[in-house]
Image 1 (cartoon, rainbow, N blue to C red):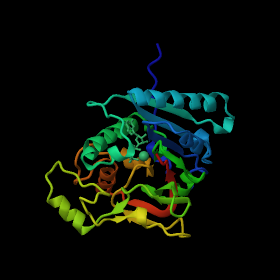
Image 2 (tube, protein in one colour):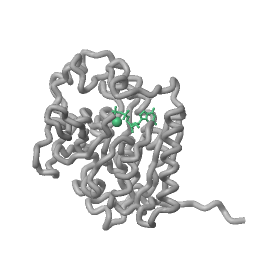
Image 3 (spheres, rainbow, N blue to C red):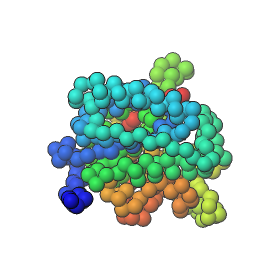
Length: 304
Ligand code: GDP
Ligand code: MN
């Protein structure tokens, strides 16, 4: 009788470098998905990082909306993986379905951004991200790219551009294109306000809160005076210009897999009065990893 096989991995041989293509580094692209947008999939397909080094991981809610998104996602996966050109095909794809208790009801943009809805919503999102991360991170993963399902436009070289900076966590600036009726033309505005630098006001405000209370960004009732990366973009500015960040969003974020392996995750509870992706940046910091932002490197969020 043959003994059961043992697989050995030396994590020191999994390189994480600023030349990931040359070193054949595996990238895990993780997306929590409540709705499917064709623009998201089309954008994913046009990424020039070698697809045979990319694993995709999704988590979708087990409700009516999630079922509809799953059906569309499944259709596109079959089209690409089975019938599409070889170069378009990804290394592997993992899809998780998950129920939350209580179920996270679908909400439109205005509803989900209401302040009283934020804590339970962000806690549920944190759990979804953690489930996705802990079930998909492999012994050969070098990088994790968090990419929301409604990010519909990025430069094709997104992964290698971000990795080039060789930072433990790095976030591009997430904007939204819209029709400006005053200017009578297409325009763009900042979208993700969770990429920020801390302020003395926010820290003091945190001290005044109860242990389970969280600070939220982008609400007039809670002025934090943090410096928001969303407002730091400059026309024609250097896309490689780096700033340190204390909080990050999840719309697009490249993370060295070692940061997650060290134990940094998305707290679904108040962690230093921060939750989910913002709490993740704080936890990474406590583990010795500093987040970086690129104010002039833009990606675009769908306009609902
Ligand atoms: P916002 O852009 O910050 O308002 O947040 P979104 O509603 O876009 O959510 C962020 C990401 O999580 C998107 O990719 C959504 O599709 C996804 N998402 C939203 N709600 C759920 C949920 O209940 N379960 C799962 N698995 N994903 C969700
Ligand atoms: Mn979104």
